[in-house]
Image (cartoon, rainbow, N blue to C red; front, top):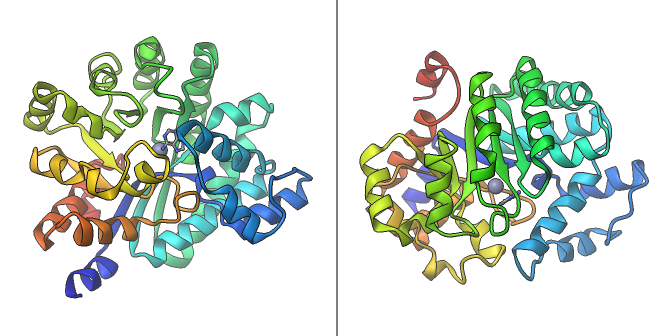
Amino acid sequence: SPLAEFIRRMPKCELHVHLEGSITPKTLLELATKNAISLPANDLAGVERMFQYEHFLGFLDVYRTCARCLIHGEDFERVAYELAIDLAQQQVRYAEVMLSPAQHMQRNMDFDEILGGVAAGFARAERETGILCRPAFDFGRQFSLDQALRAVELAQAGMKYGVVAFSIGGDEANYPPEPFVEVFALAKAVGLHVMAHAGEVAGANSVRGAVEMLGVDRIGHGFRVLEDSELTEFLARRGDITFDVCPTSNIRTGVVASFEQHPLRQMLDAGLPITLNSDDPVLFNTSVTGEYLLAAERFDFALADICKVALQSAKASFLPAEQRQQLL
Ligand code: ADE
Ligand code: ZN
């Protein structure tokens, strides 16, 4: 259709994508072999079978398995480059790419090596295609607050490699946002933008906590905000906190039962600022383009709605104002 063709050619941003959830099956197998990491699969078909989840926590296990295959700077460089090239082929002009620091910290890895690798991969893709990518940290909330503070320090040191933001992810149902108040205060004090996965696995109170206690600039997923109409209206009226929505992710992790039941359309109609994102493109077999096509084909987004979302993704990016302007 003409709208699908428009979506494929439209310049886009992706604001919510995890590096560890973007490793292609081929690369994952090669890294596991090279680094002598045992995987629950040893061929492509086996890896595809790994990427089916019974429930959200099962998904997080698979995510951690993928993260474990990254050991050396060159591993991070490879996956960062491959992701950036894939995005550039989708006409993505700018991407914010989350890394999960906690797991890498537990393995005592050198963050100069990690971020040096990521930055080199992004720089090579930028030279070849013009795509701009920036790293962000997504701290697994099930790890300790001490480690979270340490992760903020590592993110601050990582700003020289382009790190733009600090976020919390992982097990939202069992780890509410409130205890992270000092962690987020520190992140903001050092000049990082801040985000939280919220209203994905837990309800509207988790979104409220992320907004009121953590002062987030953007929310990952956030669709369960709709369970609180007062908060929804408040955030729609404010209009300064963007919801990075990832519909396929929500279906694949089982937090939403079906596409018919996903409230993407209600978020748009409520007037919330939203963007569309892949979250973990390989783990969910999707892409940012795929999410836009889904919005058009299954959620009745018209051309004007598609443009609104794409413009919002440029507007809500964490680039300095001058560079952000150039995306529009
Ligand atoms: N880490 C990677 N993907 C995630 C998601 N969808 N929610 C929370 N943590 C994640
Ligand atoms: Zn995510």
